[in-house]
Length: 193
View (cartoon, rainbow, N blue to C red):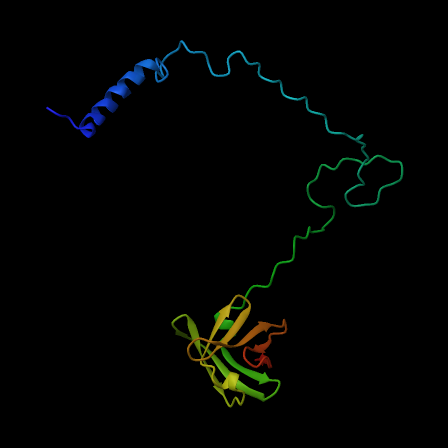
């Protein structure tokens, strides 16, 4: 009977792998405690000493009294009160003005375009989804004549054209008026009650 070399090859490889595992001994025996650790016998280098950071002398001086001027040469008396002296009130950072309410903005306004004159616009509290209805009257400027809605974003008031495009952006001036510009032409716009 003849055996082909290809039929014998897998058997030979299987026998060779069995033989090689016995020749390697305990190389694959991971639980063996007879082997020394890989770095055994080698000394571990000591860390390098660190240098101290340079320091300066610390000096102290007495603080002046909380509400008055310090007298030269006199030590400051410690204060036991946490409140400022007298009726003074400690001030914190100035607070930003609160945005006006929708009710404070709604109403009839006179609006003027620096190039085309002035006209009237009525800003209502009638909601159109997430914006409110606006109705211009007698406006010659294209940016104002097309306005049909308005919205408030913090301090800013946006006058919107159909489709939601911003026609005019206005900001408070502090005197109850709003000033800004038309988004397309850049014309200065002022709105007053």
